[in-house]
View 1 (cartoon, rainbow, N blue to C red):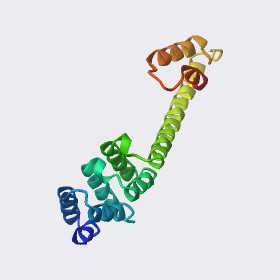
View 2 (view 1 turned 135 degrees about the vertical axis):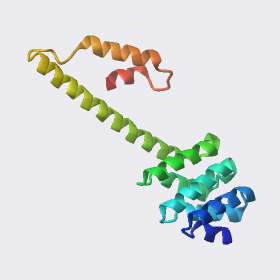
View 3 (view 1 turned 180 degrees about the horizontal axis):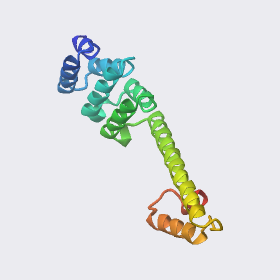
View 4 (view 1 turned 30 degrees about the vertical axis):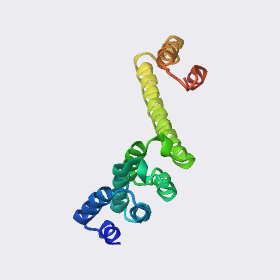
Length: 170
């Protein structure tokens, strides 16, 4: 109870000390229950501190309540929470993770893939504008460049994403 109070105290020094104590105390049922509660705290610094404790405890922290809270943390609107949650996922290791955690990881990856594709599209648009400025009659679509990109990406693809799917994206 004292450690839980320190986790939620709002005092950064007390929170760090609590995390250190939780890690030193090992993963008892009481400690893990306190961590699971802290992972759902409305205060972001407390959630971040609890995520660091989960990471420090590693696979021994892989209880159902912690894994459920970890899946939620991976979808948290606060980027530092999501980033810290990724560190906890790495520390727990694949065999400890639940389907919900993997789905949350996939959601994060999907969001990042979409962001990168949109960023790429913006650059493609700028290239088209630059070509038009240089030559109003310029061919904006260059099949040789497209083939070069696909060849490069498929040559570097180690799977399991299929090469045909790369072709459909590009």
